[in-house]
Image (cartoon, one colour):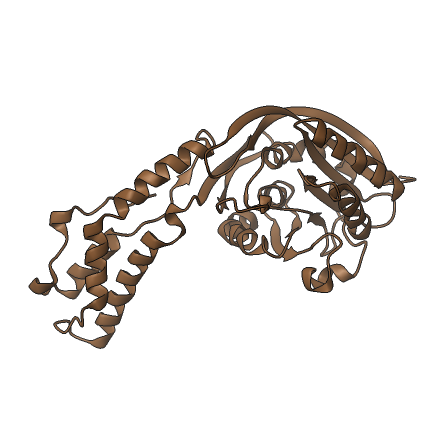
Length: 347
C-alpha cells in the first residue's frame, strides 16, 4: 500500500539539526510502495490513479527536501554510520519518485477460490507494455486456464497425478509463461514442480514474480523456477537444461500465438520437450478473439498433427480478455477461450 504523505509544514528543516531517529522517521514516512490492485480495476483506471499518486508524491518541496539531505554533510549527527543510513534512505526515496513507480508498472492480486482446495492469491507484477514485449502483461487466458487446473487433475489429466507418475525432477513445463500466473497457479494447485519459461528479456520480471510467490508456492507443496527458452532460438537464448529433450510429462501454454510463425515454433517446442510415450500431455489454451487468432489455432493444430500429436480433448470456455496498452487505449472484451489436450499418436 501507499504510505500517507508527510505534509509540507511537517518536513524538518536541516538548519534545525534534527536528531538521527527523527530524520530517519521522516524519511521512512516518505516511502513510496506500489499498490497491489484487484481484478475489478481496469488497467486504464489504474494508470490514471497511478499518475495522480505520482504527482502527489513528486511534489517539488519533497524532492527539494530529499535533495538537500543528500547534499548535506550532516555534521551534527553522531557518526559516519548514521550519516550513511540517512543518505541511503534519502537516495531511496528520491529514486522511488524518479523510477518505475509512476511509469505504468502494475502489481495485481489474483484470487483462487474452490471447494477443492484452500483459497489463495498470487501477486503478479506487470511492467509497462513496451513494443512487442507482450509477455509483460497477464492475459485473460492465463487466469481462465489456471481456474480449470483442478478440474483437469481429476478429469482428463487424472492419470498424471497418481502417485509416482510425475515423481521425476522434470514434471511440468510452461512455454511462454509471460508474467507466470498460470505456472505459479499450477505449482500451488497441483503441488507440482513447475518450470516457467519465456524469452530472455522476459525472464527478469518472471523471476521476480517467482520470488514474490515463492513462500506461498512452497507452503502449498509446490516448487517453481524460471529459465529462458526461446522457441527455435540459439544456444544463448536457451537454458542448458533444455538441451536434453523429451523430459516433461506435462507441457502448458496459454495464449501463445500472436505471429504467423508461432504455430510452427510452438509445435516444435512441444515436440522437443514433451516426454515420449503415451502418458505425457500438452495442455494448450488459445483465445478466439477474431479471425486471425482462429487461423493461428487452425495452423497450430496442423503443425501438431505433423509432429504426431493428436487432440484427445477440447472445449471452449467464456472469459474476459484484457487486450490493450499503457496509453489507455484499452477495452475489456468477453471472448471464447479454446483449450485442447494433446498426446503423442498411439496414446
